[in-house]
Every structure is written in C-alpha cells, then in structure tokens.
Length: 186
Image (cartoon, rainbow, N blue to C red):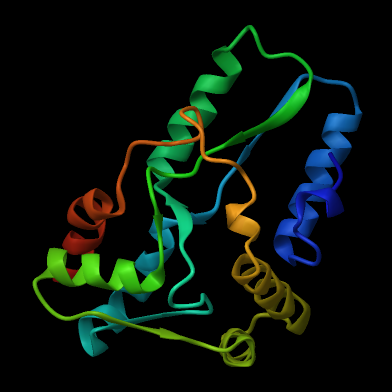
C-alpha cells in the first residue's frame, strides 16, 4: 500500500514514516507496521499549561472526533506481534484506543478527573511553527510537524477502520486518572 493511497497526502513526519513502511514491506519480509493516531501521553507536554492556565492547546479542530491511544496499549500490541507465528506478508495493525474523542470532549473529561475546569484552545499552524522554531527546532522540522497536524485535521487519524483487533483497552478517562492527574497534582 503506497503512501499516497493511505490518504495522508503531505503529512510531514508521518509521510516519511509511511514511506519507510512501504520500503520495508516491498522487500518481501513478513512485516507488520503498528499504526497509531495521537498518543494520550502527548498531553504530558501540557501539564504546565493545565496547572497554570487550566487549558491545553493543540492544532486540532475542537469538535473533530479522532482515536487516541495509550502508549502502554501500543507497547502491548507491539510485543504481541513478533510472537504471532501466523503472520505472513506485510500489513498494518492499528491501535485506536477504545473511543473517538474531540478535544472538547477531552477537556470535559480532564475537568471531571482533575476536579477543576480545563478548557481547550485550537492553535493555528503558524503559531505552532513559531513556538517550535523559538525552541531551536529547524524550520523544516517545524514545518513537518505543522503538516502532520494539518493532515490529522483532514482526517488522517480516522483512516483505519475500528475493529475488535484495532480497539485497545485504555480509555482516555482511565489514562487521565492514572497518568495525567498524578503529573498535574505533583
């Protein structure tokens, strides 16, 4: 399956990752690529903003529902695959979490778990690029990050169908209670 046929278009960092998967798959080895949408753990970068401002910020459309996955579920899937002797050929194994949530819904869950109001604000790509380059990220890398988030807003994370196999167990609420809340209250 080619990069362009996955609906990613120019997805920055993801485009490069998909191209690499295609090259490995074309070699003829048995290859299963674990594909994932956004990671719940990415919100750990926002602990300061959640603590100090009661907000988190992403480029995502506030009402776009997408899958979000816990890294422990990715690890469990990744550990299981090499042990599966029935795997042949090449393909993808999606890890989609148990539910699709919008940033607005995530803010509601965060508010309930933390016991305080947490809001969400969508940042434009130019602001993300400026912030990243301000931290010393190269212009090309910053643009690749913006392109990835633009592709996510166009539905890239919703490309894989949700099946029993692609649905992983950790809910966003559970992850917030077990991982994010301790980080925010520390």
